[in-house]
Length: 102
Image 1 (cartoon, one colour):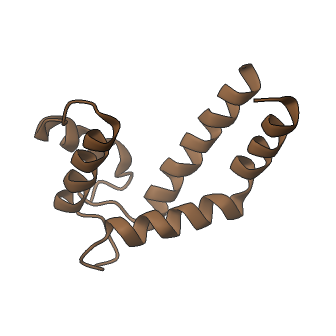
Image 2 (tube, one colour):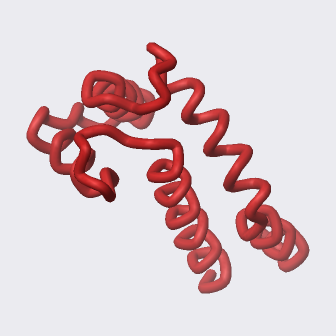
């Protein structure tokens, strides 16, 4: 990645509109029952799908539950759009730091 590509990637990943757009799309795809929340079953399905797509071992139910608990800021046992957005913003921030450091 050259300097111009790094600059563009940082710009895109740092834009709140990008976070919002990605959050909206991801949430709509994951919330299959359209309840307005990502429940345990939906979260487990996406974790298993991602592991398969990435070619890594499928997470155990315990690992899935621990991940859900870490994302679920208010402790209601499900993920709200805001909680997903906070996670995506955090991941984008990590990506920006990685780009800056390489």
